[in-house]
Length: 120
Image (cartoon, rainbow, N blue to C red):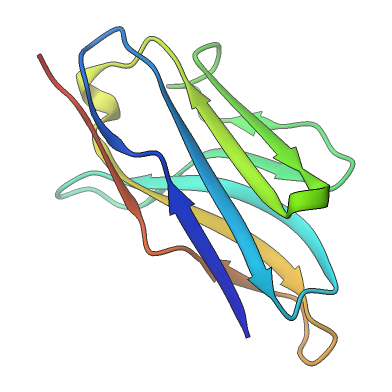
């Protein structure tokens, strides 16, 4: 059993910053990749930023230069630092992790989502 617990969402004014965190726990052998997705009302879920083990981060064009993804392997935690936030960044943000538990083939796990609202 694997759980992803997110925190850090909220309401922020345009131009402000937020930091999201996502901690993975449970029967984890290794975490192959972690990332963040978001889904705005009426839109499909989209990749915001991803980071594989030992790899370079990748970002959606819309957040490149404003958002930074990082990972603390010792804590099985991924972070998303969001700066210069815009109203169009408003969405529910979901943590995603591809995890090998040894009991099953590596698969994707999802957090419950955290709301980010950018508004004045």
